[in-house]
Amino acid sequence: MADGILFVLSGPSGVGKGTVLDKLLEDYHDVKYSISATTRAPRAGEVDGEDYFFKTTEQFQKIEAENGFIESALVHNNYYGTPKEYVDQTLAKGEDIILEIDIQGARQVRKAYPDAIYIFLVPPSLEELGNRLDRRGSETPESKKIRLGNAQLELKEVHKYDYEILNDELERTVKRLKEIISKEKEARNKRRKQN
Ligand code: 5GP
Image 1 (spheres, rainbow, N blue to C red):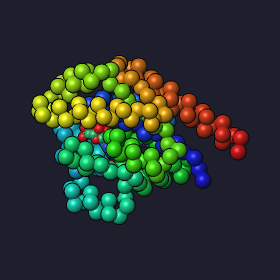
Image 2: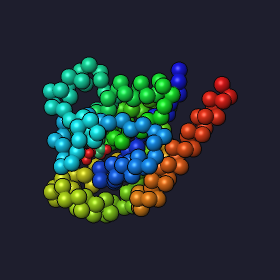
Image 3: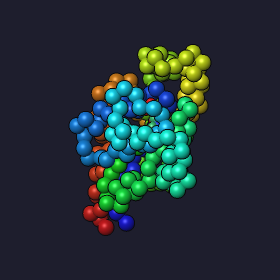
Image 4: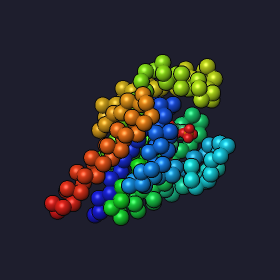
């Protein structure tokens, strides 16, 4: 069995998971990225097969029925899922891969991949999370309230994760994420040498 490492980056809605990962992958290529499938409509500039695999609900449910996802979740009225084949093939080749998924998804992955490395991105405060949601301009007062309520519950799960990164400053967060990935890779490489 090859031993690629599965990294799972998660955290509350609006904490900046996508931004952090985009920034990391700009110049860091030692970890593969798993492109998720979603039923959400593409935003301006998003490319099918690069940002997401955009699916109809019917297509999504078919993949799900065929056990094609390692996890899937309904996130703010749209389905999201991590395609199983790419993740398993990458790990089987001994290569490392990172997922950027919501907390419900991370809970499911934990059951199937207990050896994965779980990283929780923490907002500086709930107030700042609210400000970020405001800046994104995508929330009504009602949906903002729901997301902040969910975030409060989700923050209680931080102890289940291997690492916690405070996302107060993008460059610093990305540096910390790189350090975690490198540290885990080194530990794995040592184990490989011993075996
Ligand atoms: P967005 O639509 O803004 O790109 O993402 C919305 C939320 O869905 C984010 O919290 C993101 O982390 C989460 N997400 C993206 N892909 C997946 C996935 O494959 N599975 C799960 N569970 N959540 C995902």
